[in-house]
Image (cartoon, rainbow, N blue to C red; front, side, top):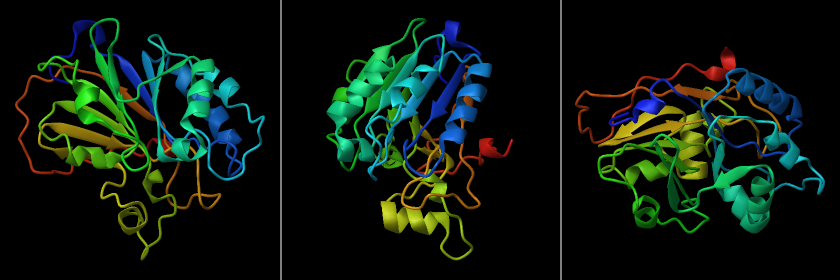
Length: 254
């Protein structure tokens, strides 16, 4: 990251997305995620939306208890996804705040040590405001930007941002003919599926998520915990129209 503040050199950032709690019998996945993430002793944990599925979910589902068990030196931060709007963002905000997570909704924050973190509302079902989200951030700062929908990369090519997204589940069910790319393009209206992308100055990582929706299973598309080590970047990156960066190692297969 360009102009990465020195206190953040070598810091560990964990990115989780699309829990869809209460659907698909994925509680064992969450338990494993808590154990693996906390074992890393991360500096920062971020969530990019869809905390509870919009299928019928038990009213007493312990989402707050689950999220409270994640621990990071600089805390937990979150943005809203499309399912959160369907369930109601007022209630979702209340649950996240009870769990100790700070919601960034069209806003930014300067963390201790000088790292800027921002979050934008869901592009399709929320009220996203790019100008407001990035308004307070210094021009020279590289910002970590939480956006549930990865399509944001098409709109911020002139900003030096690292976008962390979810939404796609990596296709969730990967078949030879009905490929994840086709599923995401025609079902979700999203061109980015999983892993790294770049558009101009903006870079994007799309997380396959922890949970499931629609169908209560995954096939050839494992759940994912994305772990990043932050390092300073002093090179001149090419201003590509949209270049695919090397595919990240599927974290769910480790």
